[in-house]
Image 1: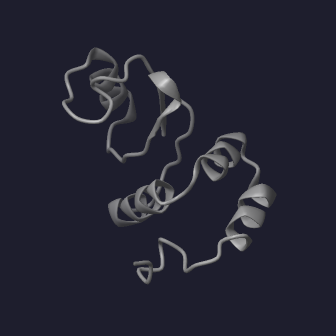
Image 2 (image 1 turned 30 degrees about the horizontal axis):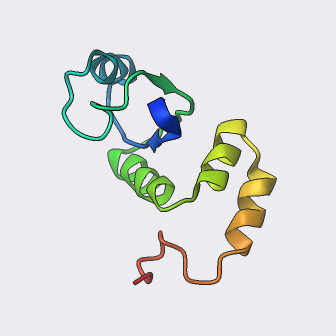
Image 3 (image 1 turned 60 degrees about the horizontal axis):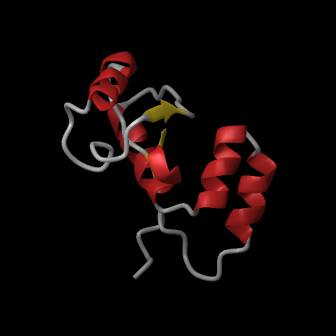
Length: 97
C-alpha cells in the first residue's frame, strides 16, 4: 500500500515490488498515483499466489481510512474491532450493494 500526496492510499499487487514502486515514483504509470506524487510504501505483504494477493488488494480497497491505518501499524486488534462495527455486509463478502 502506498501513501500518496494529499493523504490518499493506493493498494495494488505486483510480482516485483521494487520495480513497481520505482514506476509509481517516476510517474511512468498513468492512473491514481500519477497526480499524487510523491508516494511512499507504507505496507506490503508477500502471498503464496497471485489470487491471494488480488483478494487482499480488493479487501483493502473496501476498507476505510481508520482500518488502513491500523493495518499499517500492524494493529490486528483494532482491525478486528473496526470490522465488528460495520453495519452492513463486508465489502469482501461479495454481498455489498
